[in-house]
Length: 178
Image (cartoon, rainbow, N blue to C red; front, side, top):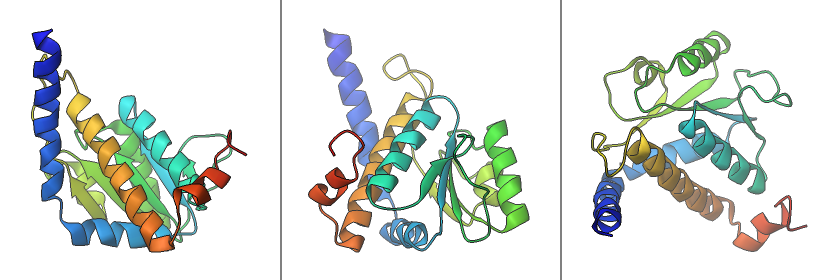
């Protein structure tokens, strides 16, 4: 049982780093999301799952949001924003998406775990999540993925406030609560 509590404490201590996020940066990103014609989200593996959850919430907020690569996603244009989630900032698929964004002048919003990577450098808006390195208490990219999920849910709350939306408003757009 000690491992469970140790793991929880390790992760909770890591999540405290979210308190250090620059609020202006998060607000600027939120405004960019609201002012975009479409918002695309991309990540690979578990980061992709987190991205899909965020895209779903954006749709529930009444925004046009898509996950890159889905069959119903339209073409990215210069009126759109693309959110890239990559712990390393070097994920090949995300780098390719960033190149396409640059070519069409779409705004790139990145969430990575450091400033020393290609995706960070290619981005118009950046959030760096300070996550401790892997350990047996939170293996592989667990801390980045979990921190990304919490961050994006924090952004959802901010977007709700900016739009004057309530949970009831989102519920009306929820696929299974109609």
